Length: 499
Image (tube, rainbow, N blue to C red; front, top):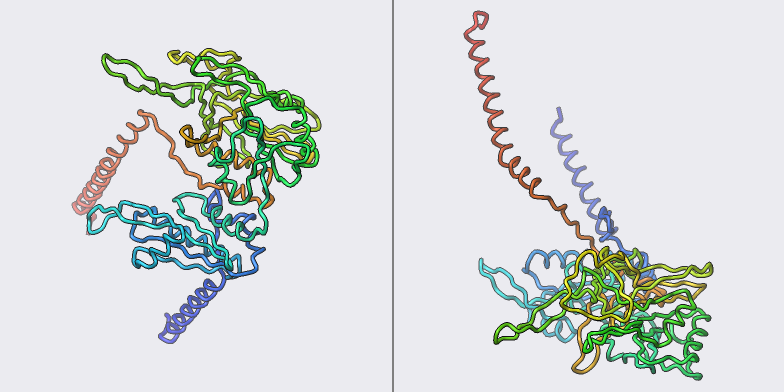
């Protein structure tokens, strides 16, 4: 038996332990991450960036409250991430959360800082309403500041935050050269790529000549040349590569003339130059059962209607190698692309990066485009064709994709929005060859979605039957058991030996 004095002793001891634990928890931030993708663990890249911080970082997070549960969870996740950063910087990073909806002045500050205003459905007093919402942050180091306009649920918050910090601590951004002079698109026609690169680099147009200094560029990008390239220009690029430079190439080996309904081989000299390095871009059109669609006008009586039809010459690429350049990509769309192969060279290594699906094929140029063709599985005889790859030799790297229009937005009336992962692939490729910080690993860091296994109809029916019948069987079994038990008790009472 515990007497009254011992009882008070245990109460005081337990209270002291609880107070001690709280003191230690407030002083030392500690968390164990059991998730497979380590979504709550800071990467080594972020840790290295934070080690180089010598002055305070102020983060002002503008988050609306009382929204749908997924947005409230986003606020909590971002707050936990900031706590990790604060712990790593030994509390040099300080943060505060402000709800702009509660104060007009705070709302004005958020808008002026560049925080994006969203209109989100919410429920108030059992009524559905549209509410103005903010989910962004302003990061400040000294007199420098960067804004994250909108933090998407499930997005790479660590990448956005670390990139903003890194951007303010870089004294001089590295230059990326975009080669022109042969009909290549200007930087204004590569809007999505340029926006992705401007975070850490300075994209510049460069014309190859005897006086040009290519050594100042971390990486050169050669995108969609239209005209024949002089041999001297290849020599300039070759000298740059021999000095440890890097090159991204996106070009067309074939050309689709839709107004003629034909596709032809295209010659700029790029394919011949790459072939000397072991990369052969074939004179063919890749077709894939997993493809995009085009709109065709058809007459129906007195009316003209637009009908979308699948067009295998626009392959949707979702088969990627496990590589930093392609991690995090979901789907790219090629436009009249070609396949490529590599001839072994003991001094070089080639890594395929992007493939077609299991139902794909290639058609040698010239090709006649028949939009009325009924495609069958027998038309797709070449699975997993390589359409992009990485060549490494000594210190130089070359990434090639056999589609020059992949990430070209165009200009004027012809401007279009390209598939986001098309631009992401180009940015990732250039970043992989240029980046010394490892931020590309953060860009491709994603939260894995655990998809439930799909059940066929037979399994679904079986589970339904079990769910319906099992409770009834259990109740009947309990009833039979209790009935038998009571029956035995009654028989026992009637027995002569029962007292």
